[in-house]
Length: 382
Ligand code: BGC
Image (cartoon, rainbow, N blue to C red):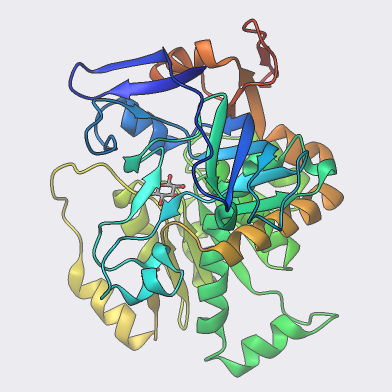
């Protein structure tokens, strides 16, 4: 069967032939892969700046944002059935007994760094025709979400962030009350930095929960991302469209900033504008460039004098996958066409290296194993 792999030593990205995986343990399940989403992490891996092949292998099969169909179920697997659609989690626990998060089922909080991630670190990924994994890592998706379920994994980032932000908001009884009110007197305000899939899915999560949401990105409107922001009732701004003075007034009332750009300079600039009692959430993983100058006194004064909380978040636990699937269903009901518009291309696996190494633009590019013979669909980016 074919798979898309990177060879870090020879610096190649290509389609390879692999043996079909075999079921080796009774709680395993075999999937036929349908869709694989591509993200910035895959691009970094294909630029050989990130990613590690499994021990003893000179290549890594990529792909971690997946949707598959169950084709075989081991005798000890009881939750999934042949024909179910499933999304599989990415991170697997480290082996160390002293890592309490991994032992407790939360490898997304692993403390040793020896976790593996399918398609990223030490384990082959899902960009291949068939995959075998343990049932406990699989999450069933309702069939009506077939077209959009590949967006689940990038949404899990926002789900994990939201879960932590909720606990932080609990320290502010008046804001907690406002958020619980059916007919809101006050809608808290959020700024999302970045209008890629992680930013846009984060904005959908915030809008669906009643937050007044601004998405701030570099590309001037109109563009496909700004159309999506406007279609869900958010407001889109870019440097060209919002004057700096106006940004200050706007950001002064912000309760939460959700960073989804991986551009540290922009993030630290925006952090300066964070309001009192507010939360700044980092999700981007910048490639390591040189140091830049940051006004540390100002930031530290703000953190203390304004009771600010800054946190970073990576990966997601099993609960967040379930929440993401539920929310994909909610977004599908609220904004069906708009959710689908996040997926701007579907390419055959043979075209994946070109898509990953080139610059085809768009929002979420997907590799699909459903159509054979290289049929490609590119939705028109307006
Ligand atoms: C993936 C996460 C992963 C992170 C760091 C992201 O692109 O979505 O699952 O933990 O990269 O490797």
